[in-house]
Image 1 (tube, helix red, strand yellow):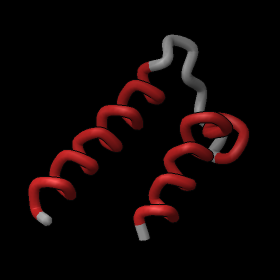
Image 2: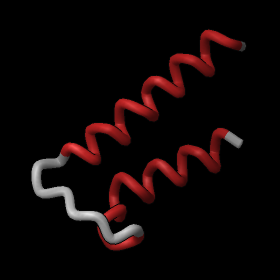
Image 3: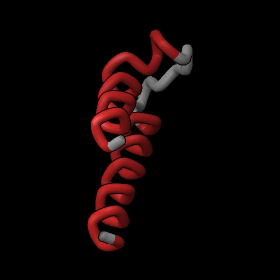
Image 4: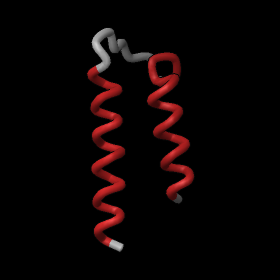
Length: 48
């Protein structure tokens, strides 16, 4: 399951504008994706 989450994160981070179609001229969506992924890793590590 974590491999799937990692693949989805990399795909959205790298090719998000082409896949989903959002515009991110200042990189704020990529920053939010990175923060969400890091918080998910932290919470997943602490819960196990």
